[in-house]
Length: 114
Image 1: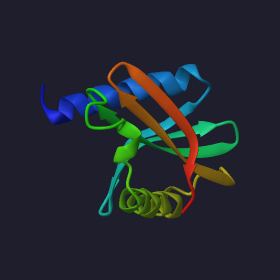
Image 2 (image 1 turned 180 degrees about the vertical axis):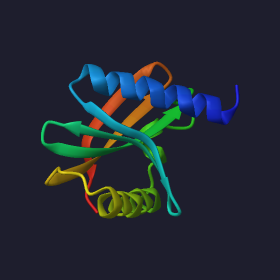
Image 3 (image 1 turned 120 degrees about the vertical axis):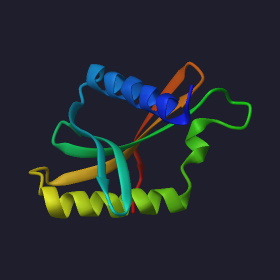
Image 4 (image 1 turned 90 degrees about the vertical axis):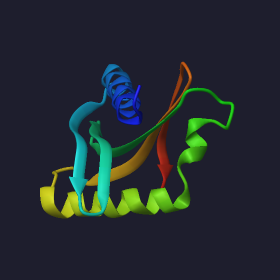
């Protein structure tokens, strides 16, 4: 499998999980010059920017460890772009993470604050 296929599969799995847990999916793979947001969804009155990370196993660490401070800053920049250009009605937003390591899926709400 290619890296893109694996990533797409992980994002689909994450999106299905979020939908089952009450999130309303707004958009997937929002792109701008700064990069890409994996999933944008509403969780009640909050707009969640969801970063998805996956690893086949925990051999080299859990998938959640792959979200560096630099990645957090990049996601925050892209989210700011999204907010400026799409102008969603949500008054609040947060950054969530779906980390998939092997068969384990972990959702971290409000994973960081810029």
